[in-house]
Amino acid sequence: MNEHYTHRHELRKGIFGERPYANYGYWSKEGMSIDEAGDALTDLIARELDVTQDDEILECGCGYGASAIHIATKYKPKKIIGIDVTDIRIQTGKQLIKENDLERRVHIEFGDATHLDFDSESFTKVMAIECAFHFNTRKDFFHEAFRLLKAGGILVMTDIVPSLELNLSDYTFDQVREFLSADAKRYCDENIYSIDTYKRLLTETGFNSVKIYSIKDRVILQFADHLEKVAQTSPPDAKERRLAVAKSFRNEFMFGGDYIVVRAKKPWEG
Image (cartoon, rainbow, N blue to C red; front, side, top):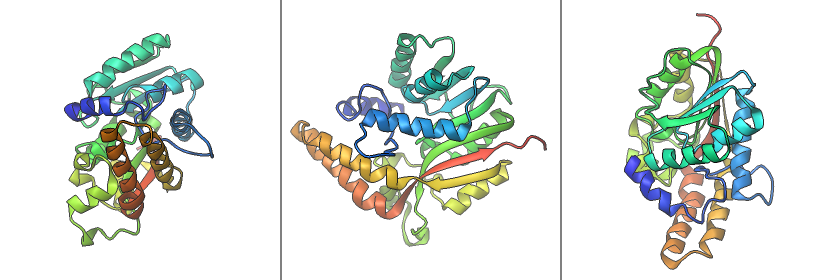
């Protein structure tokens, strides 16, 4: 994964704006820029987390730290720790944190979301934006998130899953992965299951008040539109690649995938 996203670090040039988001964004209104869509997705996560100034937040798969910086600046929680497995993202993120004078409240470091060294009940909130489908496995991440949350703590994620209309028994894992991600080979096979199974795994882990809803209609086609627009001014090799990815968003993803928001709570007792 480190090697893959190190390579992607160069490919992202021209696609994303001044703020180093590494997600598809939430295009909540017409005429948004990619930076505004990234901010909007982070704001959606922050609302679902009910961020307060007393919060100690863990972000898994934090990328370059753009969401952590946005939340720290706008919502002012006590601290945010981000973990990621890509060295170039961590190095870049640390520099951005320094430039924003947030070193006392925001820190990012190398870490595997399924095997974390933090003490149990270290955080009030855990977040993961558009990355848990990579984890080996998402189920293990649920257990780590539950362990790390204090009683009453909240887990919020955006994630990519098979659509409700897709009958998984009709397709191989390779076919399903093609529906679900521009990084299809990075989608862990053990994470391919229905939303019903997703809810069940969260509940079996111990979470309650589980809420899952789709925002695909404000994410996928809009990002495809953005990618096509960027492609028109890209060098020939990048143009062809970006148009192909945009086409896969419109065809494969819109047929077989869904982009969801997940919120779950650790009970106050028991």
